[in-house]
Length: 359
Image (cartoon, rainbow, N blue to C red; front, side, top):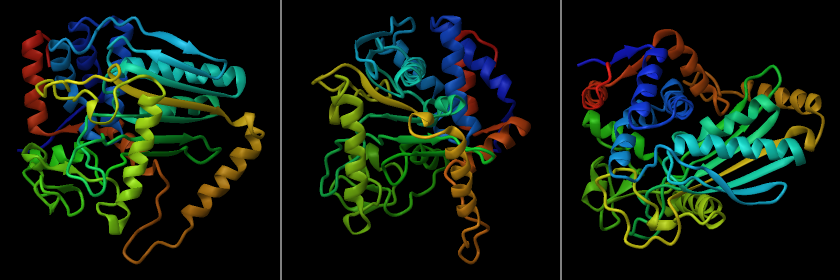
């Protein structure tokens, strides 16, 4: 069974139809589909159309509101808290990021925390919105508890990603988008679909021993923080994941730690709900709130150029700048289509049949 390639526009149109079928207004359906498909374009296959059925299941379980009344519940000139009214994170997050950009336009920087939301796709989709405004964008979110802190067997944190997107001049933008775990859960899901083992340092079993079983989360195991173990700095990954939780939930009033609602609709909701829904955090910083855009971009190009000339270790072609692999993948996939695993295609066909949409 080989992967089949699908044109971006074809998958986008299909995804818009699916979101409309669950009741999203046209504009929201387009926003949600564009955010979701940005993952497939950038090569983050775990977070793209492979998750579409998962969002529909959340809606069926009445955990996603297709027509949310997204509103600002607290604000200052540079900050805000947004209540997503249980909407798709794919719709709530762009609203909040646009608000951060608008605040930065007015006063130099904008910071927006979000409560009462759902899974928001890839962090980069939101942070990168700042680039076209000559701003640095920041995006983070908490997520279902799958990660054990260093020295624990309890799953306490999500994969809690962080993205920082910074514009450059002639060089492409710097886009660092990373989970605070050794590997994102989506990478584990891909290994499960392919029936392959996980590398050492990705996961541990229920007793806290290192394992390569890609299905270990279903047997009481946990993902490991960035670093894998204490000797390789997992306490630093744990701390970064904790920082994301503080910014996303403690500043917004969302659920935190092991009480964040799970993405799979079949996983029961935590009995305790200290906050509302999933939490996100966004930042936008106007470059010219610090120095002239021309000077910054000149130096940014110089900085990137320096790393491009860094000597690669033998056997490696070159040193990469954060954002390079995803940007190159997007160029490739816009021209040649997006490859989907047979399991994902089967999933989308079943979804199409269920909602009476042509795939």
